[in-house]
Image 1: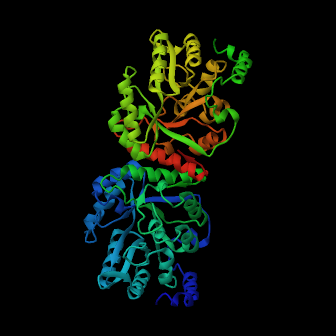
Image 2: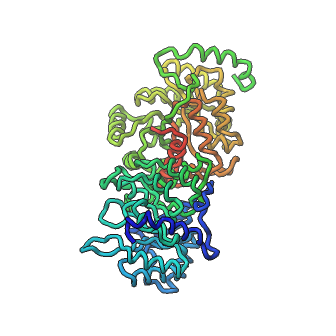
Image 3: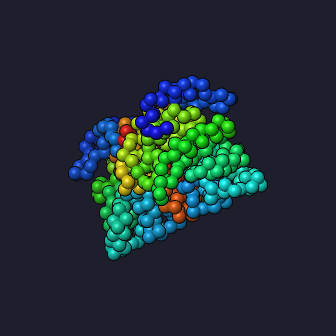
Amino acid sequence: MNRRNFLRTGAMGMATMATWPRSGQTVSAAAAGTSTNTLRLGIAGWTFRKFSLDDTLPMLRRLDVRNLCIKDFHLPLTASAEDIEAFHRKCREHGVTGYAVGPIYMGTQAEVDHAFEYARRVGVKLIVGVPYRLDGQRRVESPELLRYVEGKVRQYDLRYAIHNHGPDDLPYPTGRALMEWIGPLDRRIGICLDIGHNLRAGVDPIEDLEKFGDRVYDLHLKNVTAADKTGKTVELGRGLISIPDLARTLLKIGYSGVCSLEFEKDPDDPLPGVAESLGYFRGVLAALGASAE
Amino acid sequence: MNRRNFLRTGAMGMATMATWPRSGQTVSAAAAGTSTNTLRLGIAGWTFRKFSLDDTLPMLRRLDVRNLCIKDFHLPLTASAEDIEAFHRKCREHGVTGYAVGPIYMGTQAEVDHAFEYARRVGVKLIVGVPYRLDGQRRVESPELLRYVEGKVRQYDLRYAIHNHGPDDLPYPTGRALMEWIGPLDRRIGICLDIGHNLRAGVDPIEDLEKFGDRVYDLHLKNVTAADKTGKTVELGRGLISIPDLARTLLKIGYSGVCSLEFEKDPDDPLPGVAESLGYFRGVLAALGASAE
């Protein structure tokens, strides 16, 4: 499969959608186009990359955040059953649930296998991943590995949200670029829409959300200073993306994934910026008559 | 003057309003009933009572807050001209303006004199004050000192906003209680509406704002956990007061004073809670199509 095939295989993509889900797995409200008054708020683990799990969890409690996307530095892919149990126990003690794992970069079938086994052992229903192949030193899109992932989501009945990474030297710059690769694939393969990177690639993330929202299974909530490669992450209310417009769209499409704040600024002291950003998002929701859980 | 006289002297109060302002002093948009799309955001110095000015200002810069209500521990009432000049220079270096002084408790004419001289020397146009008399050990309302303050606001052409302090053992529990004392006085005497204390006294602060907003010259932005004496300050989005409703009212009445966050929780580590609270307020405003400066 390549980009040119996408339009032709669109009908097949629809057929796939119609026959899914097979199991009792929750269908996102987005698929049904039902609006919502509640969004799920979370933290992308990357935000606390300089902090151990033991130091991160009290901050999450203070922030009153319940959902954490688990990064490997908080729970290694090699974690034992005991490690995983201890991780979940600590999270529970702080009112936190690890709702997904990732982003995990996967360059080989063995790495895909390993990631799916990890997700199964951790007990999450969502993997945030980046399947790639190497083109020289450069990571690029890999249709072969995408097909392999498709087999895996069927085998494990897990969702797999691919993270877009903007104009940097990584595959899948935007949500719409991603859809050219995954549109016709099993609908359990979707997008982890990084709205900051989307805008850094010059593409309005709200437009992508409106077009492809039914395939967005995770969202990296952030804001950036410029609509190009120079754009840096800033506090949520201080960037170019209109967060009220984003929130209106998420509510309108009934987005049922987590809005996972990924705050890349101030890695050594992220708490004030994270607090401001979460406060901002909650304030926006409150003024729109909605709320976050 | 006492409470019973308020209704009878209401007409005089109106007359006073009609003849004011005498000078070129700005009339609040509220008085004209003109709505606004911009509110002024600030910090009540009390929030940083455990921090020196040198430690407070970098936090204000990080929070992107420009307006500070000056408390005596950041600039003593005995400050020399050099102290005051150094204070303003440091503030300027951090993009901050000291927009008012207080709250200052004043139990005697000499203390009122001293506070007005201090405000004049600091160069602000607004004093947040609490004129009281002692009834045994208890501070209570003082009509005599209010009349003395009235002479002073005329002499100095300064505004004097009286802070309400809820059900605690201090005078002026609510905005409406304050109006019974100051309604007929010179309109330069108004309210520093502490919305948290108002609610702790069982009175809806938004209702008071709607009724008496044209006399509210400063506002202590906060939220509390209960509508009685047990209510504690929490992050702005986590209390009982609907901040979207508050913001809608402030915008509707064209409130032109500062919304000054007074965050009383976590005095030793206020930054995360302050950041969350300011973020929340800005998010609310953004979703309402308004902004803070």
